[in-house]
Image (cartoon, rainbow, N blue to C red; front, side, top):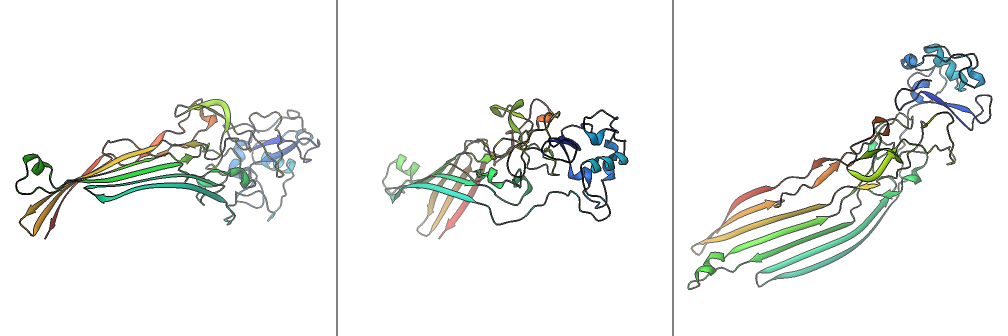
Length: 350
């Protein structure tokens, strides 16, 4: 079969007796050999078959050559020993079984420091160290396992794993000025300053190819392999290459002769291997109470969110396809949390 980009319609592989040699077999994509029609190869792919001349491939079942077009599809299906005839089951699209067999582990340690409000000052500081591990997260397609046959290979840091989180809040309140107090006392009297400072580590993210490298009609869960000619400027020190770990159903590996890199294989890059940038934000409230007589009081309030106007990354690009070129954009920020905002209010009390 001719190669068309990273996808292949069919290729040889060891460990099958479909052809004459016990060490050379044949494998094809579900879409090519039939996805929608139960009675034969999918004619939508007939144009991909340009034909194979007699003797061009050293497999006995190719000795007479393979014709072009749909007849070539039928010949390839016969060579691969796929069943034929009306109503005979043939390869189909991936099946997402929604099972309750996922596993997760969560460990955490929390420290809290608090000072109750007295003498115009209150403080609360909370730190949490945590580690979340799982082998599945949700039913969304980008969170599916790379190879549904081996969900145990998905065990890694969870996308919800946030290793450090430290939140501090405080209240500074100046007492109200009384008759006879000096100018400075009247200037700062009845002011309240309340900051909130938060720091948290980034969360893991998965890198996927975005193409059907596993030949299972799924493009949202296949991962590349580590080591290759493709790199991302947003993930320094790591290179990516085509998926090259080919697994039999028993978990043993096999190689694909004459085809490099192989198709239908897994990437050796671990799930959720990389971590997004840290989060840091300072929020602030400044208010002053202004009395009007004995009953009425007005609070003038100014709130600032993300006071330092720091860019906090909310999401990153997950795509890195080694077949698309020598660079990719995996890890590039694609969304951020809100920029600096101000809010003003008046509060009347009586």
